[in-house]
Length: 235
Figure 1 (tube, rainbow, N blue to C red):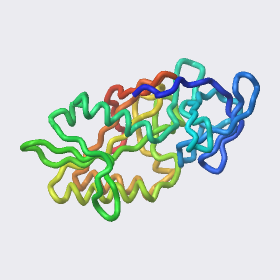
Figure 2 (figure 1 turned 30 degrees about the vertical axis):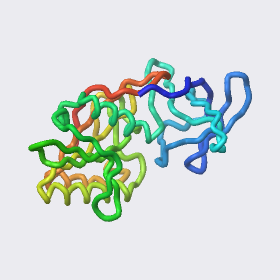
Figure 3 (figure 1 turned 180 degrees about the horizontal axis):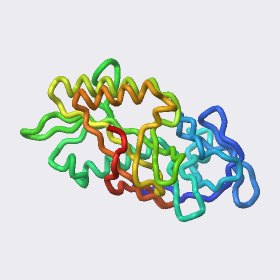
């Protein structure tokens, strides 16, 4: 997935009210950018870190910049926009690039199911069980090479696990898909100390037949693309 508009470098001043970030542009001017990430963004919001913003000239948008990347300035990047994984995964699903789903011919995003919820992707195909795929963006890393989810308590995430378990119990395929929006991680685990309820729900979902897929990403200031499958440390 290419970014529609070329990104520009900046430095973070502060991230606040979850969805706002004050930043310095290279010319020294200060702007406020939209931060499309409701999580804690632990380790990604320190003052002065290099970031990349996507400018826009849409008159309907109050903010003229969107925060897209953290540049770790060591050759690695983290994508902070939680809408990007769905866009990147949709492109890969339509191109049938993911072995776990390559035989499915129909991809329906945001289909209603469960208790007043929407599944990120509903996959179907002749002779195949219906497949429900929930996607989570993973950006937390507290130990070198290890990505963790979640970075804050997520009641919504726990609800999604229960609904996937229900689908699996009805004989459908149900898949929890973690997309690692970092280029410096090669494995993933649950942050059970941050949200033990989510970790317990994950174990229950696995026991109910929910599948788990973890993929990393290729990230540059030009775009974000699905990478390789990586191991999940949790049982």
